[in-house]
Image (cartoon, rainbow, N blue to C red; front, side):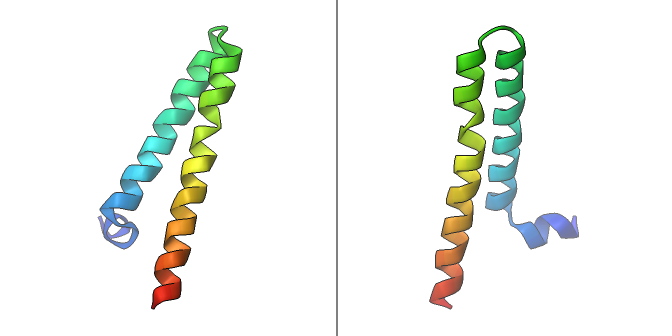
Length: 62
């Protein structure tokens, strides 16, 4: 429970969303929709990069 407080609810939600995207992308890729799986799989690092960017902006303002 302490991990969730340190991480924050919004960050935890984004990480869970990235995990869900990776699972769906793997499913699509392994069922034969390779291009859709690759396209969807690229969203997770994009969201994580955007999350890091927002944290950098927040820390710079302090």
